[in-house]
Image (tube, rainbow, N blue to C red; front, side, top):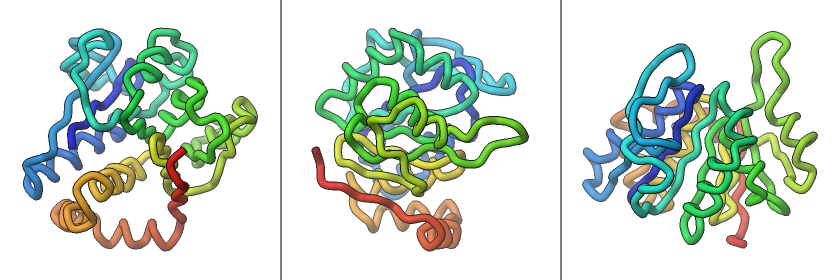
Length: 209
């Protein structure tokens, strides 16, 4: 399983738990690999000033099995970026596109979620607008659900913030089998949290379309 993780100016650092989970999964299965991709290769400043280095840009990203689209305060800019939307559409052809947190709003803006159920971040701080409510308002062709994750086959969406861990474990199960996902959850000491999340919020699985 090779994952391309899309980052941008304003990605929330916690969404890079996707990278962290995959890094730990390599201890369970050496078939796991991952890289960061941004509009341009090089330094990318995430929310609150953390700087990471994107391995590849939109024009030189190598093939992968799944594109993971992160969320964060910069999602509104990226959801309106012709370059980002074109990259997601092009790169995800023939592979899985999995959006975590408000990355779901970027994926919705591509049109790839039209006619499908999807989810995104629900909880907000203060007077912020709920991204799930915004998905219903801005993308009426998408059936926005209050769910932990929604797997439609070629496109997947996950709930907010720490649920990016659940999404990454779900992808490990899809590509490498449930034992790999469960063992990864165990070694990151997330088994109890995963069970609690599974009991609290459903995962919606649809036939591939």
